[in-house]
Length: 294
Ligand SMILES: Cc1cc2nc3c(=O)[nH]c(=O)nc-3n(C[C@H](O)[C@H](O)[C@H](O)COP(=O)(O)OP(=O)(O)OC[C@H]3O[C@@H](n4cnc5c(N)ncnc54)[C@H](O)[C@@H]3O)c2cc1C
Image (cartoon, rainbow, N blue to C red; front, side):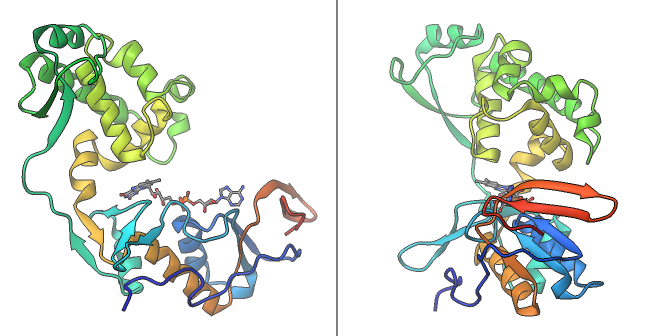
């Protein structure tokens, strides 16, 4: 039988644009919103809580899809690690299995080579493209010593900057506004590694593998915040990706949502919140694009 539940197989969530009153309104049915609702049920009645979600499904950035043979495949977040105690607790509560990620072997990358002239270009900061040069497989240790030194220095600098970010309050970091106005790629080109495109490319590849987005789309402050939370660039690339959920991370969100609905919590789907206001007399009001007010 399939390992994961298909959408709407076991529970229904509402999508009608009606208005109601609740003690707590949670915006967003990602893992944070769902686990927050679950925690609130320790002290509140299910009818006191509503989750208002813009999309037509719960789970946010977790989503498990199925291969034709019913093998689950995560298309959003897919790794967990032993340090994520709260996630592990949720996985146990919802009967999901953790498996070890295959990590043995050597890390291999692909880069354009171009012989001595290609290396000289990169060592002096110019990007070269694979279409004009020979493609080469390489390991980190197999890099020319100069590139390796530059990348090591860059990693140390990024880790040092990350240590200065206050956990949970990145906006209070020194120079937060400037860091948040710059993409990782812009920072690499201007400050981090202006003179070595190999070091720059490796750090940009780290951003790509963690955020599934280009280094030109992620703010430097966000990158540093994630590194600060994980404990270093190396941890982000190694330890943070050591385990997987056999049934898929999206299945955790799906089961969490199903258990909330079964206990009587309303999850309002297709309801994008467009306004939140607060007054001393009426409390908080949340309005959605489809005209509902909570
Ligand atoms: C491709 C990818 C791979 C990842 N890999 C990993 C990994 O391997 N390991 C790991 O630990 N993390 C990973 N992450 C990060 C992880 O997915 C997120 O940190 C986590 O899912 C965030 O949960 P959240 O509930 O805070 O936010 P989200 O999952 O983003 O949930 C927010 C929810 O709020 C809703 N919402 C937003 N605005 C509104 C609005 N105005 N009105 C109503 N609803 C709104 C959104 O639709 C969404 O459902 C990955 C992320 C991506 C995208």
